Length: 199
Image (cartoon, rainbow, N blue to C red; front, side, top):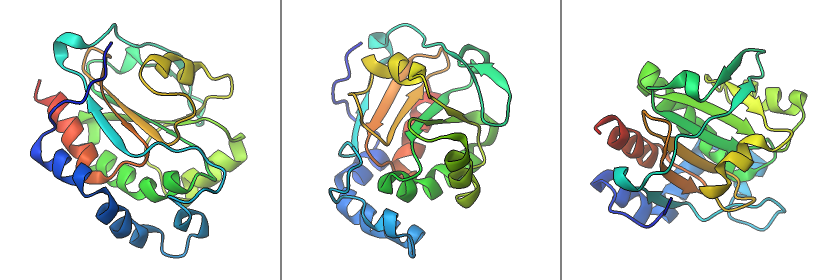
């Protein structure tokens, strides 16, 4: 699978080009959050640069599949979620850009409802820390602990190592259609989901 730069719809391209302005606007979402205010500084977390890539339908690889248990104790798999597009977001609680993007992920997941399934993948924390984050940011979609690295391994052909946060959008067949390495904003995410829904 080749993740080259492709033309984004106007909304996503415009948002991507104004990343600095978006980061400033998003700071209002986490006004009193010291960790969120550190986003973009070198405080020990690993983050990509918010780079958006899309894959043409004909260039997408095989469907991705993984069975897992969510933090609320439910067993599911990526295959079970088809043909609904899936948004997979990698995060951990002390990651400043993860905190900054949490309100946008929440609002977009609520806006799309059952048209897109969101899955949060915690890549570092124990259950208590993950649940505290989920409660604090009122995350409405299922989350899993990737303690053994299975989801990260599954996405290793899509994402560079240790890029947190990162977001991958799977199409109706479960194939990686788009990725954002680094913090994502609502407008970009909506554009990527709309592109997949329009296929």
